Length: 247
Length: 314
Image (cartoon, rainbow over all chains, first blue to last red; front, side):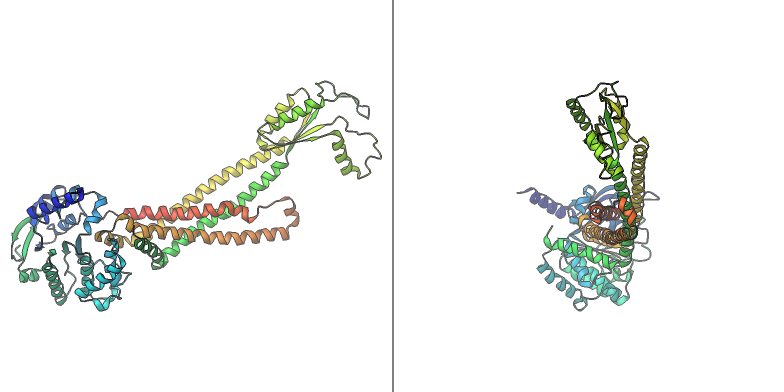
């Protein structure tokens, strides 16, 4: 068995035992003020659909940034897909992120290229052969319902359509985990439900989905696992949970 | 890196220039302006230096030897020093030629000296009034210098030779020329440093401004899993292309302007061009072309690579 195969096997064993996302006593303190996360431990199994909820300043964004390895924890350990992110070198981060789909509230599309190129961009980064790319991109655009708009620029699309492009871009490389940071924050109610339905379909296909949100209505309606953060601490973690003002 | 990725990077580099027209134009204009000033200054300085060097090449020291015998007009002979025989004169000639500051040594016999002098002052029939050579015994060496600032050292050495009767030279010319030379060297270095510093400052600011506008774009690329190289390569290529265009424009302008100025001076100031020998445009461009291209592309490269780096930590 080669060194790489051995490492992969170790990672798979770790995921089976501890989850695809595993935080052990994680703290994150910025230079000023109280800790953004304080002694947080959680485990998310492969294929789960999890909501992370909480007020502004509760530590949700910090958690997403830690999982993306945009930040490193001040204390404790963060494992994603069996990899210890605190020990990961800057050089290895791009490879790690390629197995992680991410969507943001503000879509973060490249404005000066069209829908097709925005999605293809993710494939170019992983050096997908052009022939394969020409199959994959239209297929994923069809999945998110945008097959007819591949030539449009992001500025020509509605908020919901832009978020679907972002989802297509996040999914085209078939990631194991999808992180969605307030994905419906800028959308009207109809688009919100369409995006959530898409996320459910993605999850049903086997991708682990982690959604950070403020939206009580969708959290309460979907009855999925809900982890509630308050002032950097997990105050509740419920299977088929809900979210109220009191949280 | 796959070929398709390489082509993609190149395509993006070109596309970026057109996407950010205003920034690209501002950068190209800045680089062009700086390199135009640099090229203009270099052309003037190179010509000035060339004129001084040509003048230097004409500066010579003449060495006369002791001679035993009577001059034809009955004047006293010079016998105080050691009178050299022809072999010794030749030996001294070799010694002079071996010195580092000497570029060329020409032996002028007394007959040749009288021939030149007679013809220029009395015309072709100069021998009619002077059956004998009035310059008999005035064998000399005409010594040309490669570095006029070392003339005094050479003169001191020549005067110390017992066979040497007289050394004729112009200290004023040598001092003036070496002073001008030094002044040109200092001015060149000073102005080039100032121009380069200004160029680097202006260009890196312009590049930084252009790239900071695309900070968000760089961030998105990094979130998706692009390597630093993948993010940086199109920007660096774009910077280098801007540098290249920014260098080619002033080179073209200077080429045309130089040829025009040369033609104008030669046509309008014939007397001036008789003693001022200007360098051909080809000689100027032998240096200016690679240096300008190097500076343009180099600044584009360094400016973009350092600015992109600031935004890579996402």
